[in-house]
Image 1 (tube, rainbow, N blue to C red):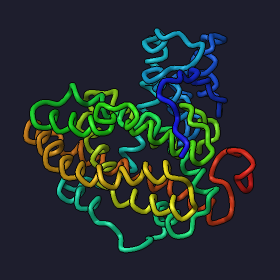
Image 2 (cartoon, rainbow, N blue to C red):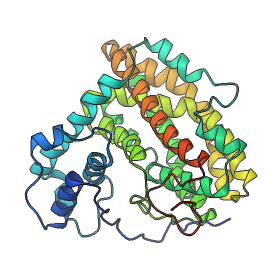
Image 3 (cartoon, one colour):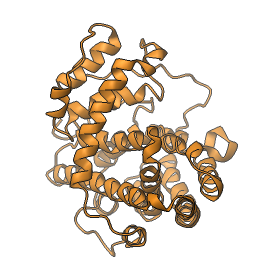
Length: 344
């Protein structure tokens, strides 16, 4: 087992390579080499799920997390960057609301999350990796998921001051587990870094941003978008419910995949931990986080449902991309991890 030390300070994340005009302007602005940002018309005509828009948005969101090396901390509140971020969010969110299926009630939405398929439905990454995935595919999956898992639970923590009573108490209890229950070595982000080390991957924060497919940027950006806006607190709770309710069975399959490809004990531990912890969290989320929120603010039911539905929509897009490439024997990433990704 390869363990990443907790007391070693990692270098600041580096700015990514642009994927188009929008992300190029943002990254150049953060470098201090350009002051002109894209006009409203250019943002509104951009592909709403495309890599250019989502890399621009991702880079702006990272200013609220760990930032980038060489970028001043006060750029987080730069009014021009915030104005651009709002336009990028508008383009993404407006399209997402139009594309997400109709709004069922909360009971129906939660029932959909609980309806675990008996076998592989053809679009399940965890089933694929469990049943037939190869080591190079497991490594790719870990690399692209590192964009979230190395800051696991951070986007959801933003909702805590926006809740009260039973919902807040339950949310804090779950987040306490996510952050290691007071032990740095058990923080879930740290456990994922250990998983990456077992797989021979670089566990540094943001190390695989440049090779991550466009589809994964949208899934991570959704969490940040919902977390940073108080008006979207209900949708963030819906997103959190989607993650926690579906995590345990999916993690059980991924733990099996790690064992089958001999990924290593730390890789197995990460998913074993989620099988156990998230089975408990699922009950608390449904009963106390969602139940408590809607008891206090019943008008947020549609927002909670939207968070659930939007999460599923974007995850299905990502699954389709991964499986189409893997079944064709091709890498699902934008470039090679090292020498082990076919087709790179």
